[in-house]
Length: 248
Length: 206
Image (cartoon, chains in turn brown, yellow):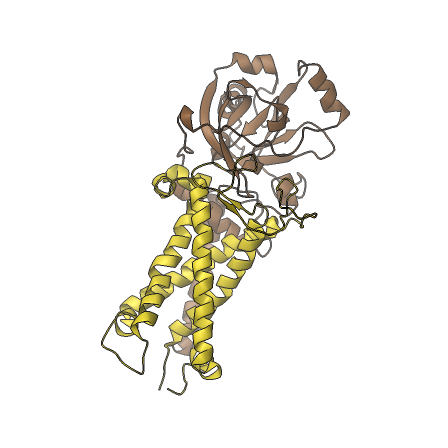
């Protein structure tokens, strides 16, 4: 390769990457944790998976494939606020939906159970490598979002657990939030969702790894930007060292 | 006389770097759960197909060691996938070049014995690494992605499930590590400095 060719190729490649990055940003294909040395790989993974997978469904399984030993990772919170709710049978548990919606709302467990239910048998795969298959019962997140009326400028849905010592929160892009399998889950394998699995409410996101399925959920906030929430990287684990997008 | 073409040399060393980055980050990921299973599901409540006799980076896994290693999965996963992209791009460049320049046909497909070139076993090994092991690595890796397998379920169903894909990903890693050990041993026995120089500068004594 001549020096002239090398320079021309280099300039063309740089321009190509810049144009691709702009286009990707315009179509919402850049993840909130795209900064830093792992940003390029993370953006490529997110953009490629979004384009390739579209609105396809996570694999669903027959009843016979439900795991006999679903592993509950971690213990329920020992915080007083949670144990008090638990002692009360979660009768006062509330899920609030706010932010960029026309009609903010607050749901009790009974309110959610009165909405059209969806039941799905999917796999929960942890980034550590273990997995199990279970039946999950709940209300599609899209249903309550549609009831609330998402404003047109909205881009992300932020959701989080009860305010405990190690509170977890996360976010989804609007595609994943409106995906039919993204489920506000109150039941598992035919019973109330056990506290070990995040009961009384867990958001199940079966197209992504287990850590996106936040346990003990109480808040949903619709927003157009993740800047200013935590460190702006989209989730409590992404503010640490884990990636925001977990479709892989 | 040039021995290795420029593109072969560059892709060789990028692949070397990528391989070690993928190996180290993959090892860090695996120590968070050094148990393997077959089929769809597998966790600490289920019997393992086999376990690695190493400590784990999660207290939930009983390893027999009295300590838990630090969690390194965050950066390891970022590095693993970013390197995966570089590896795939490099591999495509190499295969595209090898096809067009007849590198595979001339140097790697079995041919009449030529004492100045690779023997049949070497040729078969290199072809297996390029066209079987690396594609198997990508396949079994993608088969662990819940989003990707949603769109393309056959990629994991054909392997027998998510845990089967993970176990196979580990076995293909072992095969590649064995290849690297054999490869470096042979380079050493053939004259380390001479061969490494040939792969860096393209020139080396025959």
